[in-house]
Image (tube, rainbow, N blue to C red):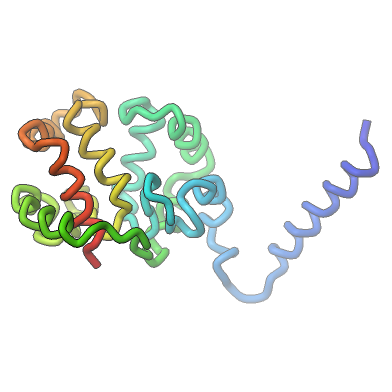
Length: 201
């Protein structure tokens, strides 16, 4: 049975939808991917610019890399009980439009500032990462290698540890060489590497 409150709620939602639909000119709300990315913003921040130490910034992400990660999460190849249901939802809503939306957003580097000494140690240790991620960790979109620059240090360190333990994309042959390198790096060095790459602008 519909109550007065539920009717008013439905009317409010309808009004907002009609207002958005009737906006003159093209703006950010008119982008096809805008509505489809709202669930992502709850954790990844407005327009994908996370301010959290543990959540990655996805603004400016290469569309092909974005789509690959969503598909990996949805298929359970990149293990995450939190991301798997959201990724399946994105696939249903339209992953290509969501990928284009985030790719078009300007990345705002993490506001978290790691200790200067850790940044310097990380820079020295990053030589072994440069072959794939580039001298400053900016990545290579053509090879689906993501940029590490400006990402939150907590997120970067966690991902390095997951690679080392083969808990991220386990069994992925394309990541075998990188994971082999990771096993040779002490865990403490991951803290320094994360500090360095998060500081790069």
